[in-house]
Amino acid sequence: MDYEFKKNTLDGSYHAIFSMGHEALGRWLIDEVGKDFSTIDAILAQIGVLKNSTREWRLVGEDLTLSLQDNEALVQANYLFSEDDTELDEDMNFYDDECMSLCGFEDLEQMLHAWRAFVTRF
Image (cartoon, rainbow, N blue to C red; front, side, top):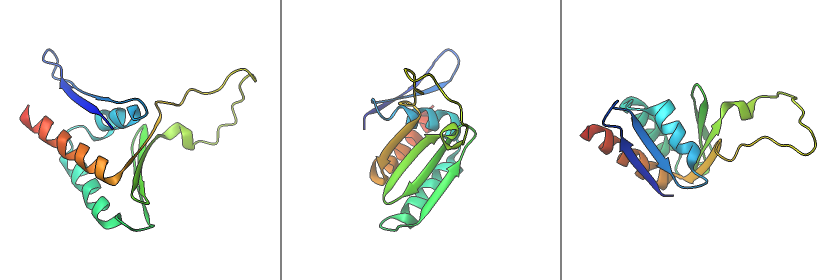
């Protein structure tokens, strides 16, 4: 999983650009975590508790949810959990490639530590 963090010098906003297949992690990091170090600490603590465990832990955000289970982290758009029976024409389907990302606990830990170091510098 490749990623890059940037800060806009004009407005002070942060950006997290992730490799293809991990875009939802970038959205989740910016929109749901931001500079909230207590959230980062809680996630890191849960990873420590859940390593080599079959239990699950979820952090439900406004738009995206982080699920930790089986040494994997899944970020998923909340609308994917809905039971909306919206039907599309047979030639169409929902575009959700950027609404779900999966990575291992180690990758998530490394990314969260790198993010904290990045936002702390500015």
